[in-house]
Structures are given as C-alpha cells and as structure tokens.
Image (cartoon, rainbow over all chains, first blue to last red; front, side, top):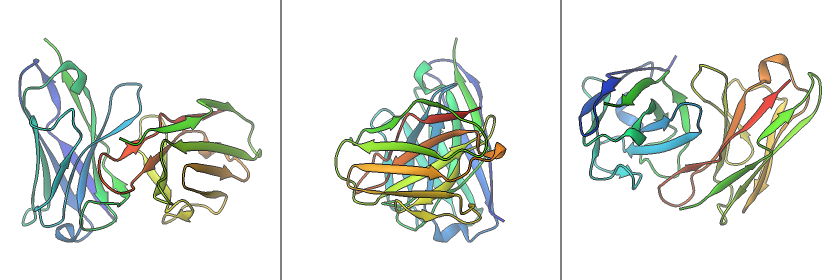
Length: 122
Length: 107
C-alpha cells in the first residue's frame, strides 16, 4: 500500500522559510515522479511543483518559481519542498502526491498524502 | 495557462439519483483529463484519468467521457459515501497542470 506522510508545516512569518518533507513507502520511490499540490483553506487545488523520478527535471507554478525548490532523496525515499520568501498567499495545506509515471509530464496524481498545513502570518 | 471550468458549483441530490458533472477546458486537451474526489478533512483521491479510465478500486458507478474541451463525470446511482467535492484536472502538454474550481455534491 502506498503511503505518503508529509511533515514540516507550521506557522511562519512573512518572508520566512520552511522545508516540507514527504516520507514515501509502499512503492519503488525512485521510479516515480512526485508532486506538491496545495489547497488554501476552503479553496480549490493548485499544482505547485513537480519532479522527475531521477530528480533531473523540475517544474514550478509561476507564483512560486524562484522562491520554492523541490528535491528528493531516492536513497531515503523522501521528497522535499524548500519554501523561501513566504507570503500570506502561500498559506495552505500542502499535499505530496505520487505521479503515475516517471517524467513528471502528462501524468496524473494517483496517491496523495494527508497534507501539512502552512500558515504565513505575523 | 489552461483554465478549467466546472459546473455547477453545487449539486443538491438524493441517494440513488444519477448525477452528471461538467468540466470545460479553455483549449483542447485531447483526453488528458482526470477527476478527483475529496471528502471533508481528507486528501483528494484519483477517480478517473485519460478522460474515461477508472483508477484502482473505483466503483463502476463512476464513469466519465469527453475529449477536446468538454468532459463529464457521471455517477450512475449516488451512494451516501459519494457526497464530496469533485475536481477535474488537465495534464496536457506542459505545466502548469490546472484544476477546476470543484463541484460540491450535497444532499
């Protein structure tokens, strides 16, 4: 059974930084692309960033490009999201999701973690 | 960026009814369309992809169709556990992958 467990969320001041982690199990982590998706309270879903299985291709939504960095450690079965220069509009539940394929392009998100809440506020 | 528009925003139905949800893309996405279900306090769950293929363990009462810019999700006979928010998502060509704003199916 695929399991994805996010951690690292919390309250942070505007301009601050936070690093999210997603621990994966139940599948061969190194052979699947991974994705971060967020959901502001009471709102819809927004794709944030994707990363290929090998870690060589990264993709970001424009609103976080240059501030967020997605990465992975295939030896530890972990996905990360380094978030810098945080803004109030970054406040959301951040979900880690497993892609259906390897390259992080034209793939669906077939398993999701339960999410971790980020609140950006002074 | 491809804009996904779902309708209606809210659907009030009774158990046992047939339900049809719509999703429109701002440009053609072929059949690169997925549907997700999200229940309160839970993460989304993949229901269908490739416009009409059911994901693992998804009941047969869920079906979907469409191509290009117009897509539908049909629940043939609504069960109590189907009351949720449903999102469509396009994954054609290149990022950003975008979601519709969701349709809430309520009693």
